[in-house]
Length: 296
Image 1 (cartoon, rainbow, N blue to C red):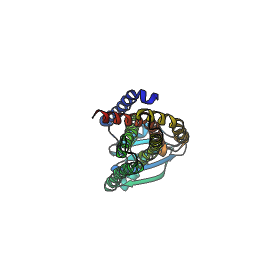
Image 2: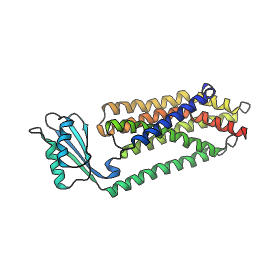
Image 3: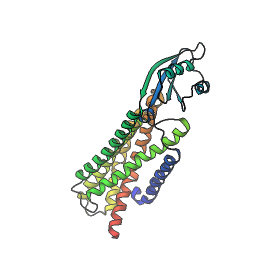
């Protein structure tokens, strides 16, 4: 029952974290990857040793390519992201990446036009919207027999509010990291958010389903007591399931390829706040809605 007893503290903490994340997003902004804005991505590997990033940046400034992002990958490689390149610019880029006898060998080259990038961005936004709508419809249907004291559609709205909490906070943290590391939003970032939505809604359904069962079994208890005991009963299960997934993601972040590090990081952060919101945000919010109804 401590979750419901101190519900105002948990609600204030959740709202504060969301507001701080929104500030980060507003101040620093999200940096779009080449998948969304269009551009070129070149991956190279060196024969002997990886040269200094500062030296390569200085060399590439002579090409007048505008903003160029260089990220280390593996033990001897770099990933270079820039605007779309002509054949001549592509050749010049590879030439500047080679330092004397330390030859840069191209592993891959990807070029995406601006129109394709805009289309991918549009589809990414639509994907998130469709997932959110599907969740509302599913929750409303699944809890259609729950009519008192909180109607079934309100469970759906509360779920969406908490899911926004679950993706806004990781996005805000990523924005802050991006400001200092240069990380960009790519298709894997969108995939991480969609995965967070799917896994997080599962946790919330487990908690809400236990509340629904106990509302039918313990009709003498108050709504707040039922929510408290139901949430308490699901804590161990929810935490164990989430930790199982996080234990897989941490090694992927530490030892996995460079291309999946941001994906595993965002997913880990999202799962952590997802389990937090299922237990310490969704349930108190449900009780708060019931209290507001009493006052009307």
